[in-house]
Image (cartoon, rainbow, N blue to C red; front, side, top):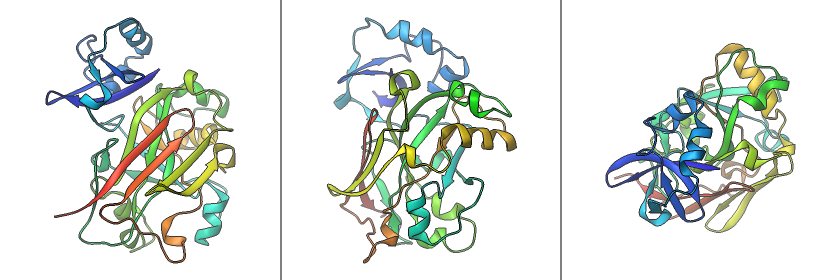
Length: 281
């Protein structure tokens, strides 16, 4: 199934997507949002409520929110593809490189990415988002997939000069609207095997990144095991799994996103996350 968070009639809602139709679960279930649904392990209940229900909206009648607007934690991986390590010239580590995002840096599908006044070095990073459905600590690789609710597209937009002010990346990874997340979560059973699936990034229609998830240095089970060693994972947590090679700042000349540009992250089996760039006023 495909779950999403959205706004309609001025209210925050969540529901299920079927083709162009949206079934609003907010008015059918007792859970206030998608995170609460995951915390209650109520996906089966949601499926029953949506089955055969008359659609409440079409996709063009809603505004998309980030799939999980209020995640307890957002963990992001850096340097998870060899091509990206090679293009950056950074060191390859035996363990995942982890940094964090703030929930309020996120933005939904078709919502604008605001290019800050402070920087002209705004870069794209197409990534797979992994959404945790069952929490836990010390999760083994063998058990990791049983803790995954589903997957989505993510654009880990980077303000490169602020990212590189010092050795810690947090400032450049947390500007407002710099975390596009969507358009929806595809449940793990519908997504199937990840390894052969492809991720692509396009800027103004031109492909700038492409990889298969089999190329990850640390695949999903490994990074779930690692992260759950130092913190408990919770339902609704989001893990953003790293970007392939082809980022803008390593191109010659660099490809910085500017006002008026359009960026798309497409993942096979999920769909396309689209956002436009607008200048901060």
